[in-house]
Image (cartoon, rainbow, N blue to C red; front, side):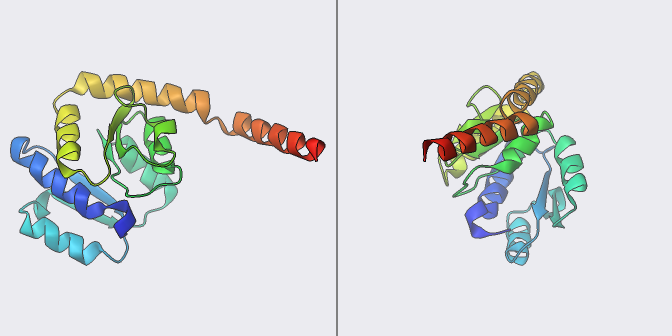
Length: 173
């Protein structure tokens, strides 16, 4: 829970969405220096009983929790690539994220997730509600996300591409 990941924004949007959709729950993974502040925010917003905070978990446990989710929300203020978006997409979970850094390489707006402006709590709330209210859309986006990961992020194919690039650069020197 670090400021550049905007966990307080995720919590505020969740609280706003829960007013319209009381069945929503939120699992926050990561731990970090903002945990106490976020727990206080959840209590102040009246959603503490619907939020499950976790410190860092082992990678296998993280993937299990992501796969068990309906939606992945990652409202980061900066991202170089967005590995969490790839992980969620590989698990068949639609992603809501800002249109920054490498996220648009993983999340195609309206196809396997929803892209929002940075720091836009209203847009994040609307996106959460849109996906929460449409299980068929979540399923379709999840399938699209898995296909994108298979197509673009296969480890062996990516390593072959990187090796080819290195060879081209070395041979051109």
